[in-house]
Length: 276
Image 1 (tube, rainbow, N blue to C red):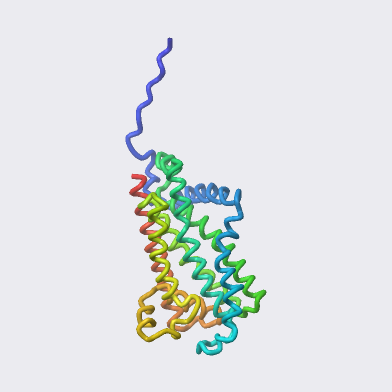
Image 2: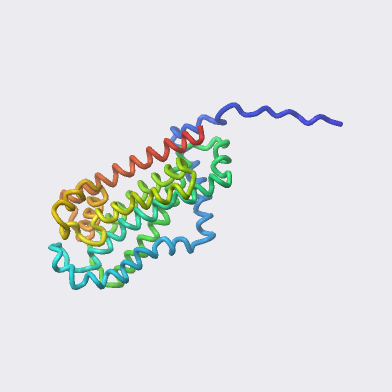
């Protein structure tokens, strides 16, 4: 009987690309992860529509309620949908992306993350590829929402709408990265869901997504000034109107970029720790 050849166990990462510091390796590995992730979503495209159902329902059911009220908001527009759609875009970027981590928990439980760990893939690419998938889905959902808004009567600056979608994608990337980091930290839907709900409720109420914060008491408006997503929402609304030079737009863009950088840093750090 022939003895089976012995196989020595690996003692460390298979290649130096795993540190995620080589740009070519990062892009190549991220594209591999992205293609795998996007194929999984294309097998069940219904999730794209499921993710956009909440803002669409707000647009269809809440929009008509704003028509007699928007004139009293002291805003540069009296079009209820030009006011509402930018807020719903930000809501879509936050809520849709914050739940991206639930799929990662399922992958971790099925051993996908462990299988990726033993490959020489860049650890940063494991996050970047997933973020690219999340942003692709968010872009499709944002275009559907804007198209429906136009159909219902929204008017806005074309270049400003494009800028607003870009800001939304930055916020969505930040939330998706944070969601993935939280998923690998908790590794439990039962722990992650209440944390997200606890965070999202004050964010939704203090961001002025549905109604301007100027309608509330002075103390509530002052509290909302410390909510980054309020500045992002105001920035997207201003760009929809073609106002690119206001301080609100600059603050909103700055917060969106800062949140994206923070989210990617956290997500990358957790992926590297998980795969070390």
